[in-house]
Image (cartoon, rainbow, N blue to C red; front, side, top):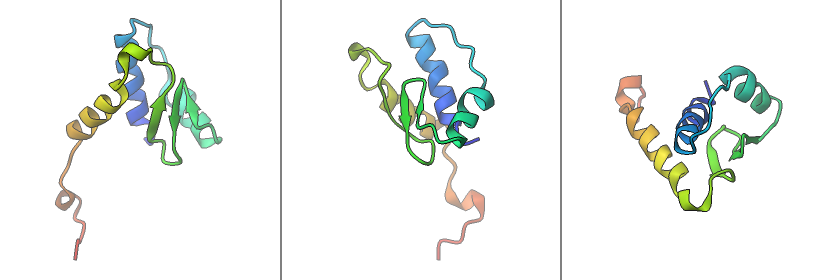
Length: 88
């Protein structure tokens, strides 16, 4: 789903901030995004649902979103040749 990164980040953010997490990915993220919302639970996203910034984090947690994006991309990394993409 296009909101996988945001959903996983919101789970991690709730742990960092000791908040309860009970979002439904489809109802609470996918549907609002598909209807044009670009602010999802304090996270501004672009037209691809990629997070740009998080206005909900306290100032002593700056950089958490960027660190999570790096972690998420590294964790889900797959070389292009695994997708049978012709690069020529």
